[in-house]
Image (cartoon, rainbow, N blue to C red):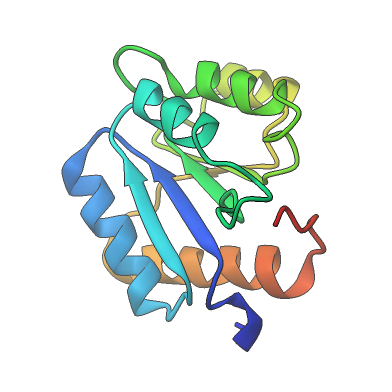
Length: 147
């Protein structure tokens, strides 16, 4: 990853603590540079995102990794809020979930998901996925600067 990404934040929205640890470890193993913040619920994530103030020294995440299946406010509901909120809609949202049901994939893209990835098995595969995501979203793809 490029050196300019040290300040970039990835927001992980994942209710399963074991999956969250594996994902964070994979991001670290893949040398993903930046801050990884974690919200355990959809409600916590929306509150976190809405309380960040662009233009006051606090920037929105450069990417959101979002689980689809969570109790309470589910991932699809979080996605809809993010993509219909002016100050959030340009943040890339990558669905990272166990489901590969076509109806889930279709619903997420219809709601504005930027990518949809079925959770891999094993830390080595997670690290490959994490490295690919970071390379694509931070090095290859142009995304709006929110600061």
